[in-house]
Image 1: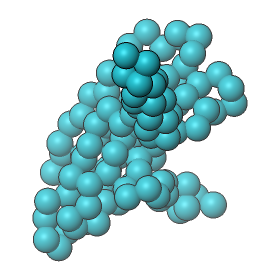
Image 2: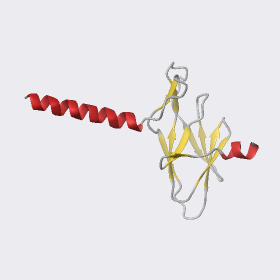
Image 3: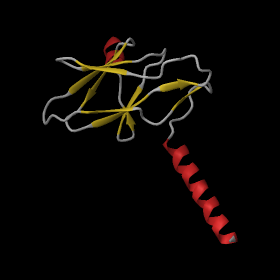
Image 4: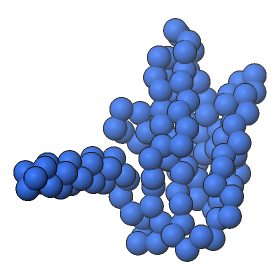
Length: 122
């Protein structure tokens, strides 16, 4: 019976480790990025998919065959009442409407995508 409890504890710690390792780091101690809430896939063979984040005016490019994870910033103080994203397909891009003050983060294979709008205005 004692060895069963040890196995249960080991399994619990392993599950906690996996859960914590998948979380994104805290931002300024008041907010955190949870597991991805959306995935966007570019299923074309040769076209780059533009992703526009509104109302933040952030633009990202997704290469052919890539899938990006969208992480949304959840405030710990519950200042963002709505935690859903609206996604729209336009002729020239995909638009993600973010409900909060912070724009979501887009990640592909462990790397954060760069905001092309910020690069153009610098």
